[in-house]
Image 1: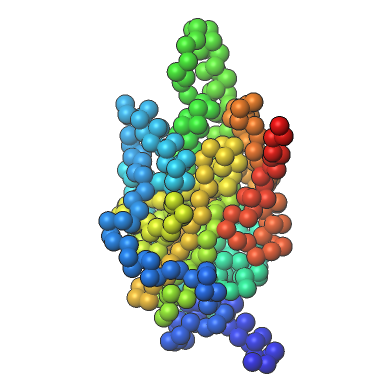
Image 2: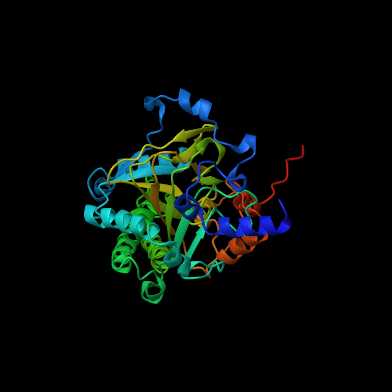
Length: 386
């Protein structure tokens, strides 16, 4: 192919996968074909029976408010340590809010390309950004995904920039953003307790010591939660159109999320896989639930106790898949560091401080892969010399 031909092809791919599918294709273009060693191992996938698909630990949000709270906190800690993922049920977000978000997201990607293209931008700080692949400015091989990214905080500032079509997109997406922000705050409060940073202790102490610890814990908790209330929220609406050769590509390559928690809403089409015990396992979609995963910032904050886990997305040849990821962290200008309450002589500090600027600089300078950003934040520990 001539240089001019390559340039024209590149322009077509920058318009996204949905645009390709709408034009009609029967084969995956070379730009999307992964090296053999990075392709999903379909033969192994076929050997996995339905029973062996991963059922993530289930956290009943309603139980966190009741007499079984202590047991639920233990289950939450175990999920964060062993899986880096869990599913939340009985979360309190009305079913119509969830259904409306899936439906209006689907409608957005069904708009004519010219309408969707109004929101294309390469500025990662833009309050709204329509794009394709994972990092389309750096990806050598594109992945089979289009996305709409929406900054959500402060909502009053971001909302006027969001798509005005479909006509009810802003109102429905704003309602969904508010509901997921509240759920995130409640989950983070529980996670602080599960880490032992705040809450009751099992050690024997005098009444005065217990009262002092409670006051100190409450002050720390209130200050931390205030930062999360003022924190960043990025909503990513993902569209994975049907793919004619799904064994050659991925919807999203293996990666971890940069924030504290990601709350994922997905339709009933399978696709999400997590790396568990060195194998890729498919997460079964459960109606009216959220898949929640630990982000890089929470792994740093917990000083490595809670794990940010690699995950990826498969595509299929039959059905489009829609998901909505809500990523939450501290305000962009804040630095994230290990909690002083989780550092001691037997558990030394394991991570450098980081912030959003460090993350942007990192992904802007290279093709992001796996957990490379988090690895770059780890402190080098010298081996003990006898």
